[in-house]
Length: 126
Image 1 (cartoon, rainbow, N blue to C red):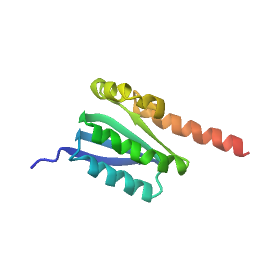
Image 2: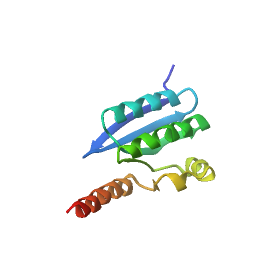
Image 3: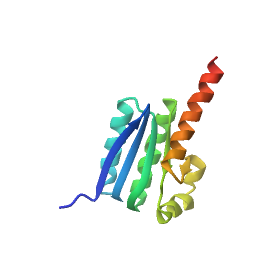
Image 4: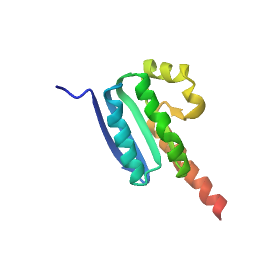
């Protein structure tokens, strides 16, 4: 049986860039939960999830993001979402996710947002 969801990540400085390919539903959501929990356990609190390769998301998939946001923000990080196909963005938008999460058109914008946050923090600490 072919995997319905492929998850991988890349690192850029202290940012984990997570790539999703396939379908995120009730059957595959536990895979993403475990993946994100492992990143958080490894002290990655700045996470960008790239949706470029995602074809479908269900409510179970949406719930994964809600279950980790408090823990990530408690670690002075955030989860940012990028590169959403329009049909996926419409679902997130309908449910009010843009009020809770930064959603960018391109991954580079989310990376820049984290890097600018670091610069502002360094300036404030001086």
